[in-house]
Image (cartoon, rainbow, N blue to C red; front, top):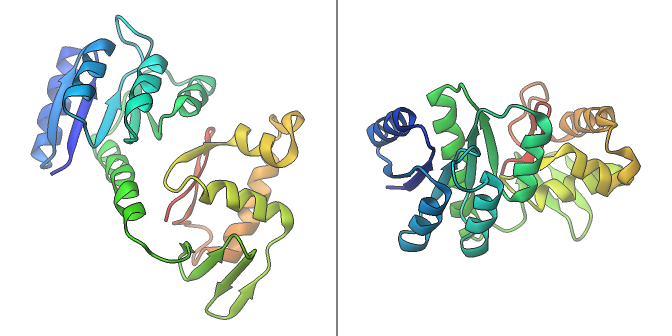
Length: 225
């Protein structure tokens, strides 16, 4: 049974989340302030933290950094702040995912399942990473599929290496643009859309429904093992 810490200052929402998650066989603790959350993390380390950013005592970004300073556990932000810049700030601070209120419970639970799979998968030796039937050797610079080698351009390799260095975690589009093309390219999201479309055609079994090279619209991209 996975242990979830839910942090929010709305009592009704805390109660709803606790009941809903417990009904899905999660163990749930709740906190209504940032300090209470940090104290709870120190006493009973959770498997994942669900965190609202608008807390009465501490800024949510500080709570993310506080958790990150002691534990490497997934953090899913659940916030009414829908601004893209705010989402990027949270992801840069160390959050693994971002869900905007109002939300659908089934989507939140699906995202929790996704982030909870990441540490389990990382603990099992699995040889070279894969994208579906394709085996990726980043060190050798090769991709091998059922029909033999797959050729990627140098830029595609840079993007793929950055995503695969963060398995299961969302990488902001601005970060990819800055690291691949330089800081002056941060506003050119069309670059990424073109390259990701080409990469999916080469590496995804069904490019129109990608399972491994995932887009989070308006935020960034994710490599899902």
